[in-house]
Image (tube, rainbow, N blue to C red; front, side, top):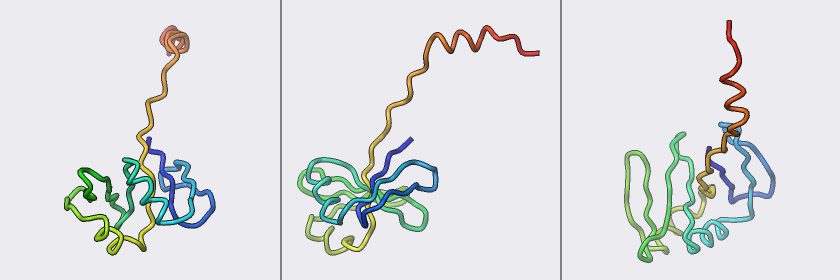
Length: 108
């Protein structure tokens, strides 16, 4: 599951997968997250395009693309996009007790 935080507006919503997304204040917030080393993404024709900074350059990557921009170029090209913070969720740990109980059940 991916947790996504949206960077426009100021309300809470759900994405298409039902994951919770909290809308934030601005494109500037997305830029701050990038400068802190986080990954952000936006949606383009139902595809997610990821952005991150490496060696003072913004790397833009999607399923069919990859290019590198200066931060100024990134701002010029993407200031109108709605960005989400990408946070990979750790898998939920399965309780050994409940797992053992499940496998003890007799299914007919």
